[in-house]
Structures are given as C-alpha cells and as structure tokens.
Length: 200
Picture (tube, rainbow, N blue to C red):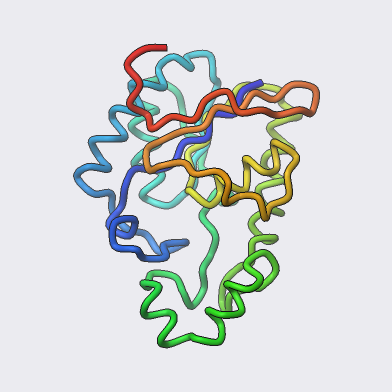
C-alpha cells in the first residue's frame, strides 16, 4: 500500500517564522498557486479511494484542490492537525524567547517529552498519528493524507520504524509530498517531491 503525505501550501506563518500549530493562517499567493501544481501532479494516484485532511483551513484548501483534480471525496480527521504549540502558538521565536524564556529552554532541551503549557508534546502527536495510521494499515488501501510539516515528519518516522527524535532528518516543503510504500509492516520512501513534477 502507498501513503501519499501532502503538506499544505505556503502560509503567511511559514514565511514569517511563526509557530502555527492550531492557529490558522491563510495560504500566500504562492501557496495557492503551488497547491494547483501539486494537485495536477497527484492525478497519477487515481486509484486512491479517499483523501484524508486535517480540519485546519490551510490543509482543507490544499485538500480541496487535490479533490477537484482527482474527483475524490475528502474525509476530515481531527488527529491530523499540527502539533498544538500552546503558549507558543501564533508567535515568532524571538517573541517566545523574550516572553517565555524558561519554557523555551525546556522545550529546546527535551522537545520530545516537554509539554508546552496549554499545548502538546511530541509524544502526544505521535500517539494520535499512530492510531490513525494503524487504522489505515488495517484497510490496506492507498491513501492521500493532507496535513502539516511536523505531522508528516512524525508519520515518516513511524512508518519507517524510527524513533520520533529522528524526525528532523526529513523535510517536506510546503505543497510538497512524500510517497511511502508500505509492505509487510515495512515502510520505505519512494519519492519526496516539491509537487512540481512534469514527468514520472
């Protein structure tokens, strides 16, 4: 089976260096253009049954573009939301360092286990992602999953049987996607794309 993990298009937060977990930011003009390119690229995955999407607007806008291109329905999944950055959410790192210096240092030292006040830690994200992925594995069908950069990194580590602390080895650009083949409980990356492919 294939997991096609698609990141939403570029947002104002992406270019502004803002932590945007559950805070919603609109796509930029570039982001809106890029998701159309990605949607056209993903037409090759015509055999998928459904598109799963995070409920946040930046992902739904991206999923709608893909849905229009593939003529497939969208199923919204709350567990696909980005990490909840709590008191950091919607703020630039400079502001966080100045206003929450202790919390910032604790998070940098142990980003896996430290739960940001009013938010999540990385293990919380992993738990909800594991539950979602395990259900898809049981169905054994190819899936397109439209979600967020951090969630994609966590998904890759889980599907490749790596520790979640290895997530930083994998980067998916806005409007990019990762194709993971999963056979007999073994996952491997077949493609990592910026979404602008013109040929197979």
